[in-house]
Image (cartoon, rainbow, N blue to C red; front, side, top):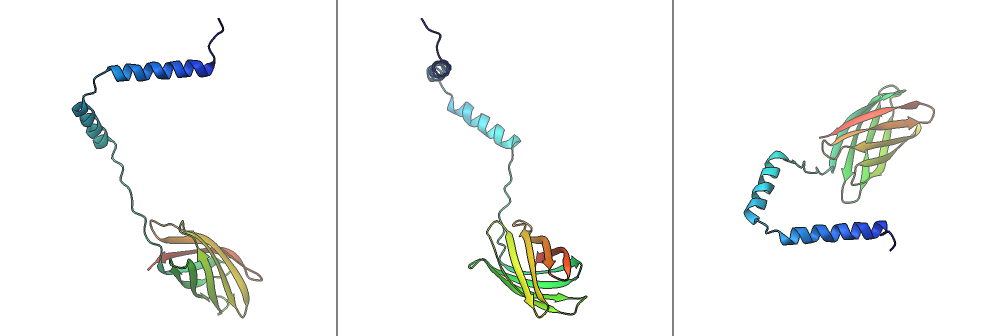
Length: 147
């Protein structure tokens, strides 16, 4: 007679376990007590997801520095706002989009050219972090917070 295959051994073992469990009388109150004890010792606190919709204010730094104010519209997933440069005394109109998981893509356009912004919003703390690049000016980072 041939040696049982690996699959046959697993199936035989599983059937044996099911039969053993089925032959035991389950005490529901004991199971409930075990579940309660497990729950007391393994508390999992879920932090509710925060809506990232609304106004964000922040600063940017690097080759240039300044401030920005943007508005996120969770209905449309669109971003609009204004950036003000301290070093070059220019303003850029910001537009872009974001996803529900907090990924942000923005463009800043003005008389001096166009800047790109890529970042992420922490959906729990509503903190906005990312990097920027402006042709002819340079690169840097930005940080903002929900107001």
